[in-house]
Amino acid sequence: MQEQGKPVHVAQARIEDRAAIVKEIEERKPKYILNCAGVTGRPNVDWCEDHKQETIRSNVIGTLNLCDVAFTYNIHVTNFATGCIFEYDEKHPLGSGIGFTEDDEPNFSASFYSKTKGVVEKLLRFYPNVLTLRVRMPISDDLSPRSFITKISKYAKVVNVPNSMTVLHDLLPVAIDMTEKGILGVINFTNPGAISHNEILDLYKKYIDPKFTYTNFSLEDQAKILKAGRSNNELDTTKISVLYPSLPHIKVAIIGVFERMAKSMNLNHVANGSH
Image 1 (cartoon, helix red, strand yellow):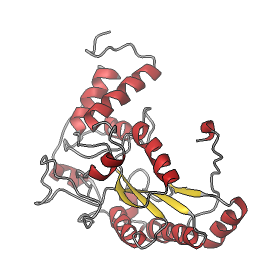
Image 2: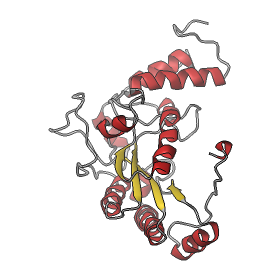
Image 3: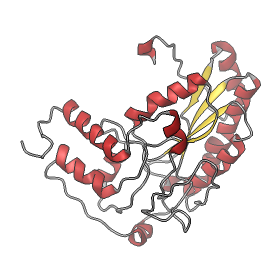
Image 4: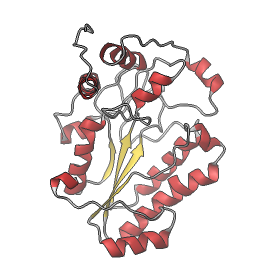
């Protein structure tokens, strides 16, 4: 945004500190607020199971605090939330292509992290100044430690389940555009379609590391080593696709990710995997 000549201020206030938020807003007088703050836990969301109060303080109290203060100052908030508040069910079977819409009630609470996110999304619907973007399994063009690709490439074993995912290269510019247009409400913020872990790791092997190998295990076996459950779902992208019809399907978008990644890493693998 700064490259486009748009001034950006990185807020210093903690979102649970209402007085500090008010002070910073009065000093900076922002036109828009983009909220990426929240607790996911380190090394993963299992942390939230043993730190429930800290998780509530950030993900519920803090987020509401920020949006409520912004409401009193008539400031638009783009809140980067999560789509990990659903799991496949009888009405949305795995592999069916039937996604959860923006109006569906959260049906996943097997992790405390997801539980807090589902609670705060419901409450934010009462604020007429908030755009809630449901992000899922964000994917960057580099091997950032927080990118979904990096995470699953380092797991000893992975489940092979199709999911909706958010390619940041495609969707971050969309978020800025929606903010500037003053769009409000809840939007499933993912590329259309779903893709499995194996499909992504096969592309990782093809484009990044030909020697890479991985092993699958079942959801039941995964559950034995995790403190909290993990959300697997497909989100309906009708709403965002109407607004941005050129948004690529995830299976197309992910190839673009690996092509840009390979180029930036100066790798010489061509599309067929040869040298």
